[in-house]
Image 1 (cartoon, helix red, strand yellow):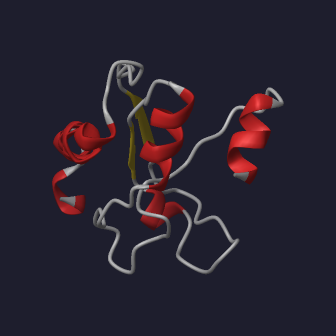
Image 2: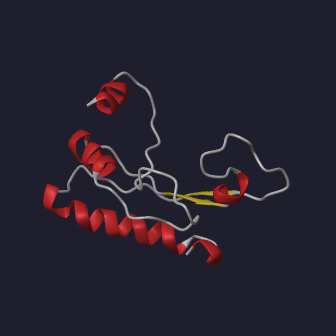
Amino acid sequence: EKAKEHIIGGISMVIFPEGARTRTGKMGRFKRGAYQIAHDMKLPIVPLTLNGPFEVLKRNSLRLCPGKRMELIIHPPIQTDNLSKDELPELMEQTRDIIHGALWEKYR
């Protein structure tokens, strides 16, 4: 509910669907929260693929590792305004496939 209040207040948000950094750098299981918010508020989902953050900023650290490469890919938005709640698992799968398809091989 707090996230919805921020969005209503005009704050843009990035919500990572895994909910936490992984221990391996590989993509983890997606959680429903971000999708539920997008559905409830009829907001688009903009899939983002991040390659390299595991190397640049280690888990549980605030120290950046210089000389490491990171890439951000911004995929086309997916509209949610005509989706039913029952279609959220399909939306989660669709965005996971989009993000996974753009990951560097070592993060797949």
